[in-house]
Figure 1 (spheres, rainbow, N blue to C red):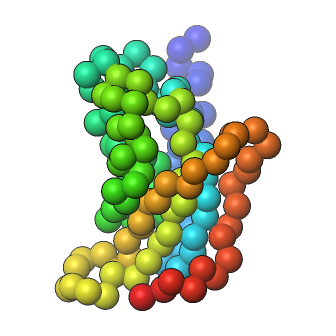
Figure 2 (figure 1 turned 90 degrees about the vertical axis):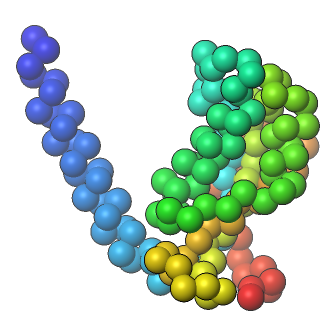
Length: 140
């Protein structure tokens, strides 16, 4: 009975990876900014108290890498402060972030693009969806 789900699962996984790679090639050229809500509570479930805030930062970076297809992810200081505001143990359950894919033209890096992750303060997380932020005007 355990043999049956394995091939299907690996097939499904390979399909997702394939789509991701194609999306990466298409997405490399365009500079885009989107707002997401990250549900940290489920990502930090069962995590040791003293490791929660550092793990939250790593999870945010992992999320940004997954959504924007860039290895180079930079966390804004305000987001860092927002995650650490209530201490190492009591990380917010959800956090709203703005992911901006930007051009990396200041140095000869192996990545042409990087992702900047910024905090977006919101009163409530109810009825919020992922949205594309139109031309912000502070491009470098």
